[in-house]
Structures are given as C-alpha cells and as structure tokens.
Length: 346
Image 1 (cartoon, one colour):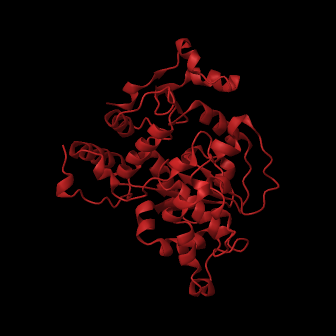
Image 2 (spheres, rainbow, N blue to C red):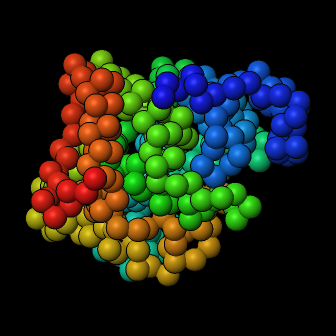
Image 3 (cartoon, helix red, strand yellow):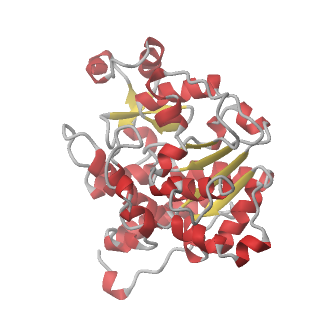
C-alpha cells in the first residue's frame, strides 16, 4: 500500500485529539498537514517531509528557530531504537574523560541516565514550549536528536560542530520500535499488531520516517562532508567496539593517546558504556529521563538478529524488497544475519 493511501488531512472533527498544551500556531499547522495512524498517539503528521507527533512538531519548530550552534558542539543523531542510548553514553564518556576519568567510581554514567547527560533537542531542550538559555553550558555541549538531516537548523550545518549518526539494520530496528512503542503507549490506545506495524514501517509512516529517507540523508551527508558527519552502523560497532571507539574519538577531536590505550582506557570506556553495565544500574531501572518514557523500557536485548524471532519469511521478503528499492545504488548496505532453518516460519 502506497504511503499516500494511508494519509488524510486533519478535519474539524479531530479537534478533540489535539493537545491543548500546543500553541495556536502549531494547532493551525496541524490542520494543514497530512496525517496517518500513530503508534503511541492517535495520529502522526507529515511535517517537513517526515512523520512526527504534534508535540514533536512544536519543539522542532522552536529548535529550528532558536538554537545557535558552536563549533565545539556535538550533535548525535539517530532514528529511534538504533543505538541512541549507547551512542550518547559513548560520546559523553569520550569527550569528557579528562573531567571524568573512565575508571572513577563517581563517573556520571554510573548515577545518571545517558539521556540526562546528553539531552534530546525535541524531547527535553525545546520541549514544553520552552526557550532555554544554553549559552552558559560548558564545551563540549552534546545534544541528541531523531530529526532527519535535511531538517536540522542551518546553524548546525554551517558551523564547525560535529554530527554523528548511528543506524541499525531495518529488520532489528522495526522489531525494537514495535516492542518499545507498545510498552510506552498510553493505555487508552490499543496495541498495534505486528502485522499493522510492519505495514506502517514498510510504507514509511512511522515516527521520523520514512526510515530509508532518514538513513540516506545522513549517509549522503557523510559522503559529501566526511569531516563534518560521521556515519556509524550498530552492527559494526557491536562487532568491534574498541576499534570504532578510537575512530569516534578521533572524529570528535578527542583522540586516545598511546598512554591511554596502554592503560586500558579504551576497553574500560567500552565496558562502562556497555548494554550489560547500563542495564544493571539502578538509575536505569527507574525514573524518566525522556518525556513520557520510563528508563526501564530503554534497555531490552541489544542483540543483532533478534528480528528472526518475530518476522515471518514473507515479512523478510517484503522488507528486503523495500531495502532493494529504496537503498539500491546508494552504497548503503547492512550486515543482516541469515535466517536459520529452524526460523523458517511463514
């Protein structure tokens, strides 16, 4: 089903769905935007060529209008459920290891969720229609976002700040999104079935999607300006974390010294930020570091290839065709483990 078949314009009959905390400007904007069924909200809207929720739209507009980038800023970008929490922990630990040595028992990552240390533009910094003063924050300022490359403010694109993007193979990304969003959606909304969610994902009508456009935006930017945009793949990071940490540190301008490598700092940093370590910390078992999301739901399996436990063979074939159609010829490819004979479901 084409994406245009699943969208329609907002009507006056939908007024009761609009969040009353939204500005009048945002409410008026929603009336003009195509919309589709949401996963954890009644609807998502096609805004600036990507899909998002009303509150996200309001925050993004504020971000685009008011954020002023510095040359030493670091912006970490992802599509949801692609290693966002992990990347935030790694970048924070790398860039701040002079202030916070990796082996210190008082390291902030042991007592703070990565999303508190590296806030989202759309979920924290500019959420709730606020205009914070960020000028007093010390360098390097590190922020996170799910916003596609084309929608980032020009101040970020034209400054010397660094952009790091991590993505995950779409099979695992979809499964992780589906399980996560059914956990965090309001109880007033019904669960989204695997089949319905899969069709929405393949059609592109999911948060910050279409996923292929999101990935290609940062992929092409990294090819055009490799000194500005670094493109990482979750599977490669998992396969050889220390090697990619050294590349990331060099890109960010905080390379590891030979002395640090000999002292085990790279390995220590990888362990500090590992899924296993973060999942067991008390701070990540309770509370909310992202608006509306409990920390305990941010950590599930972090496995490569878990999709085979959820997707049928026909779903695998359908998503493979989408990847071939949307990413073919771009040079962007993923290591997708083959399905074992025991997982050959229909």
